[in-house]
Image 1 (cartoon, one colour):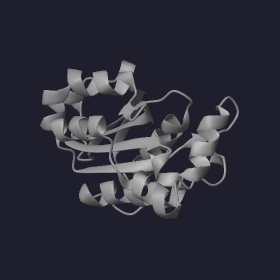
Image 2 (tube, helix red, strand yellow):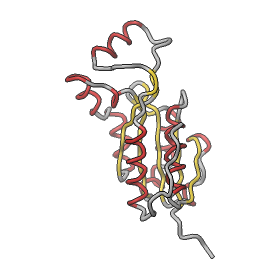
Image 3 (cartoon, helix red, strand yellow):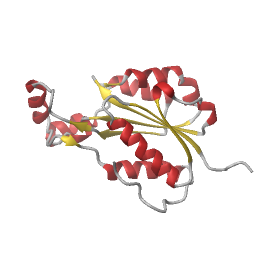
Length: 184
């Protein structure tokens, strides 16, 4: 008997590991709700024809997805257009506060908007990542503070990530989770 559970590929591009952690969390949440989930980095992604849904995430550097994420989208654009796709990014923007930072944090960079629009995902969500000041220039740290950046460290909002993964599960008709995934 063939399984009726949605088959989901969770694919990510990461540099420091924050995006991978979020992708792992989303994959675990969807799996706990009954989906068949395969998690992989963009450079080793499975054949998309085996999946009904794709959740794709990338870290943002220089206001664009990482090269591996961009390459994945460009290489699989046609397949992604014909799938149920959910797209997320991980960067500093959502963590910014204050009058300037909160406005800047809501702006989707042009390169990401163009990439997003090329595959028409069901939803796009930006999440905060992990931001350390070690190795960051004084100028960049001052700019971060001026734009409303508060603390350094793990800025990920796990409740927002869980809510987003739950919205994916609901759209796929998955039952509510019996337990909560532990935050990394």
